[in-house]
Image 1 (cartoon, rainbow, N blue to C red):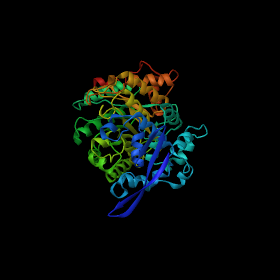
Image 2 (spheres, one colour):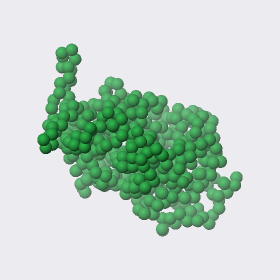
Image 3 (cartoon, helix red, strand yellow):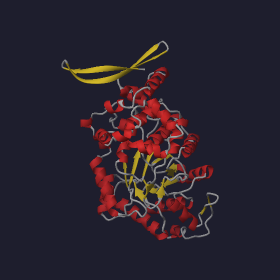
Image 4 (cartoon, rainbow, N blue to C red):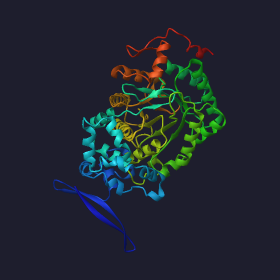
Length: 477
């Protein structure tokens, strides 16, 4: 691979020097006009990049781009800014928070060198933590593009990110779930029944999180009050969240609702976040507001973020970046607010962005790897829409691979079929399968509660028929 200086001119005056990349493979010569183009061409095939017009045109071009990318020095990512600093607050956040001292350890490496270094046995969780603030999202995205699935899994397995609110999430040999009891009309009784169903099956230690059918503050407050009453009545060490817009959550805080976590969907550019109706200032306001409530008992991680490849393209705010690189930039936004949990809703948007099971599986493992590398407590909604070329066998594959990779949590939906959002996810039973298969435990505080309620056998790591009917009383009240 050869780097070629390219000079940009404005009215005959040279205003900038940038880099282009040339790679010769056999008798073919491939030219990539910028690092942004090289990253996009090196990205494993997905329909989002084809839709955006940035994907490699042939498998040969993709292979050449990946080979060229492996030889790019990491320092190039600090010199070539993909979205202008002056026009994008996410770019400013990434560059202003970059730690040059942490970067010094890996500053001499290429992208390929970073891959090899991460896979070295001597590089542990603590080693990665010591350089983490020197790795930009673009570097993380780049190295993931030249990694096989086993590479992504092997490195992710090394990394554990621990967060706390009413329980402790992300410990080694532990695996949590978000209990998702959505209801198409926000019926409180229906939500309660699904919540109890999940609790009886050991789900909900990451969060009991409801996607509301409407974003009405009064409806949201009613759901929050109901969930908090259930929690207090049975002294359950969990946290709840209604996934309303951040401004609705702020309104609920003003209304004295029992808000544990504030949720928001985020993306990797200021323009894409604007399409979600947020910016860094609004997120900071919400973060400060939840901290002031002091509702956590073992920790104060109070934010919950969701991401997903394709969201920036949907709002025409991807700036010609490939779907995975712009996605990884969103992790810098999440990291700035010390979240309790983050997850990628990997197959939710549809086949226009991830066409089939193969693409969904690859994207889920990429997102998980990049987020953990950058320091986020990453979970995954292992999901697909009914018009995608995917099925539950594909989801079983991704679920099992994520479990081996040390995924923080997955989603638990009654029957794996979300009747409000109309997509396929994972069930309470899927989480039980993974815990039993890989000998993984729920969050320790939640496991102790399950054991006390005779719902869980800590020796066999299996749910058992309760001898206590206390929790079931709520179905009758």
